[in-house]
Figure 1 (cartoon, rainbow over the protein chains, first blue to last red):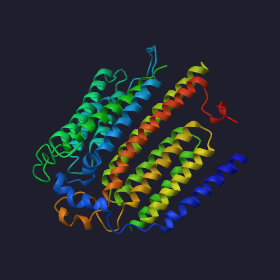
Figure 2 (cartoon, rainbow over the protein chains, first blue to last red):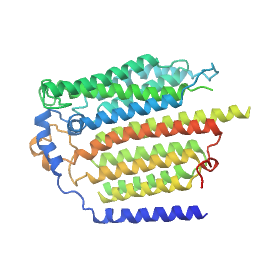
Figure 3 (tube, rainbow over the protein chains, first blue to last red):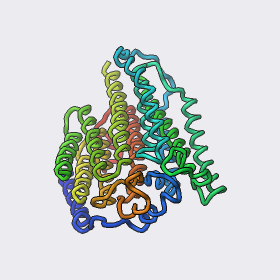
Figure 4 (cartoon, rainbow over the protein chains, first blue to last red):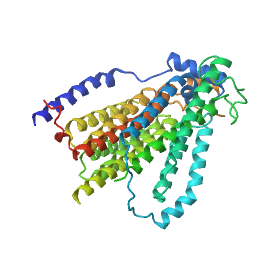
Amino acid sequence: MIKRFFSLIFVVLLALVFLPLVTEIKPLSELGMTSAKYAEDGAAELGAANLVTSVVVTYRGLDTLGEVTVLFITTAGIGFMLRRKTILPEKKRRASEILKSGTSFLLPLIILFGVYIFVHGHLTPGGGFQGGVVIASAIVLLMLSDINMHPDHNILNWLESLSGAFYVIMGILGLILAGGFLDNRFLPLGEFGKIFSAGAIPVIYSLIGLKVGAELVGILNKLGREDK
Amino acid sequence: MILTIIIVLGILMLAAAFMALYLKDLLSAIIASGAISLMASVIYIILAAPDVAMTEAAIGSGLTTIVFLYALHLVRKKQEDKHD
Amino acid sequence: MTIITILGFLLIIIGLWGMLTRKHLFRIILGFSIIDTGIHLVIVSLGYIKGRTAPIFDADLSPIDAINRIVDPIPSALVLTAIVIGLAVTALMLVYVIQMHRHKGSLEISDYEELKW
């Protein structure tokens, strides 16, 4: 009981810390300096219609690289902790006929939708992360409907490593051919608002999408396969 | 109008948060925590951040729930094995 | 929008309260994911400017007058990456819980007394 009392005091104190933040911060009325620069020059400089994408992929591209690295380390940690020496064959309930037919009908559509999302990341809302997650959810559907189906570990590893390596190579190409690391302007910028535009942004975002998708499928695969 | 939507969503989110912490059935609690993310993604649309809304809807309410359910399944299976 | 900032802070407080008082390990992780959502709401709501639109250029929004018509894109970009990392961290914590359960067979935090004082 006394512990609960201390927790209550702690939470109340935290609420008191938040109170001035709520009462004294004025709502933003115009963009800050950095955002104003992105808003002014972003479209002309990088040629991407979606400003969030140009911030994620180019202006703050190094952060995204770090984030993908964190994701990779987490996947490695999960694989390390869930390793098993023997995988016993087990009896599982088979999926129903409805789930199977539904999966075979929906699977290509979901994957197509995922690819659409990350290819159009520079034009519309969405991008590599969202598209990768949509593809991962398609694979989860496949794993649910067919209990013996498990994504090939080697293919996943190669896909993940290759897309990560190409991501870094793209960054270095930007460093050599254009202004700096992960600069997208070593490919032609193209016509504003078309799919082949914005230089290397679609390529980089597709690579991020593949990498995120492969990593998430890897996590779910390890969690799902962990038998006995 | 928009203020009303935000208030209703906010009350629902707070209720779902309490449900996630206090519902007896763990499965319902996990679903409630997924519902929080789903309502948060509607609020992101109101805040003019469609990218974040898509990510939250796909990851926060979709994949996080699936990961929780897989983990719950593993733990339950182990408990059943022990009772045998 | 101040009301959404308040909502985010309330979610953070509820999640923290749950993490401190609930005993089940899964509930603690659920509390963590509630805190996560609350923090994202706070960050995005601080970048909102009243009456403006999303930072995506099209026929209606030309790059010339964008500076007076779009919301701040940087909080969106930050939260975008934070959500993905949140999923990865949650999955890692869950796997850790599974591992703890495998060693001791219990999901109650009060059964783990090795570091108690």
